[in-house]
Length: 326
Image 1 (tube, rainbow, N blue to C red):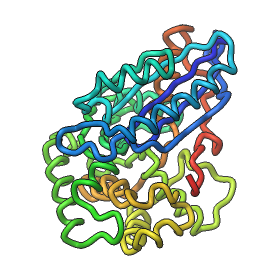
Image 2 (image 1 turned 120 degrees about the horizontal axis):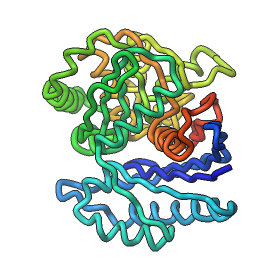
Image 3 (image 1 turned 180 degrees about the vertical axis):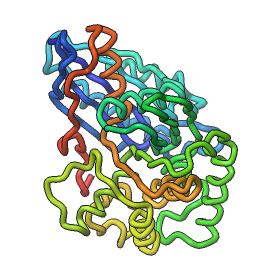
Image 4 (image 1 turned 90 degrees about the vertical axis):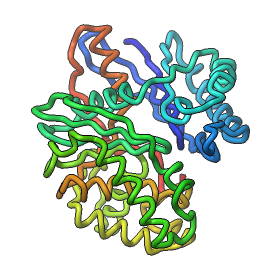
């Protein structure tokens, strides 16, 4: 058995999965951990990571290090995405991170992030043709899948945190602000020429903001025991939930069953890329995934080290460690 810890430092949260895998390609998850750190908060046009956000993140990493220390002979890989990728004070942060974890932080490109999202999904969901959307705090990755193959991928510099900070109020969102955000997204999507090739494809949605749609839907329908991974919503249902969220003020959003209070101020910006993308490519179906970047890194590692395909990959309800109160 080989133990492997993967830390995914995003713009909004930092997550860690500790797994172990066998020589035949089988694996099991030993633990999942998450802390909301809002690393990209307040970066502004100069793209400077703020000291309070850095301190929150470093404390989370120290907490993760304590969990890692419980295992002997464990391999650790830590990767960072959009916030660190864009940061003008990147080196300062990387040095602080390495000191805290005794392990370097690898800054992956947007295309690498998109590829790992694809790897995590293609091994865990029965899809043939789809458009994958991973909405993070400061970027959104789009991947076109045709006949199970990764055809195109791109990372767009917009996510729940920076979309909110650039265009939207954190309390009651006005029509003018919403129109500005939608126009910005429309402009970004229009520049991705291959989106014209995915009309009517289902959208596979990754990310905490996107999964919130599924959580709210399940609470409304009083669904118990059905995992979010593979959960389906029609685009009409997704629109109805988004309208409910959009019509609510900050306090009302925080009280919505299925919506984490820690996301209430950025959830409109977090859901908006998916809602707009459904309209743009005329998708009538959204499928939610709890498998993404970390699983993609794990599956690639298993295949590289063992020479075997991943055996019986399963993603269950425990994979979503974020409760409605986080």
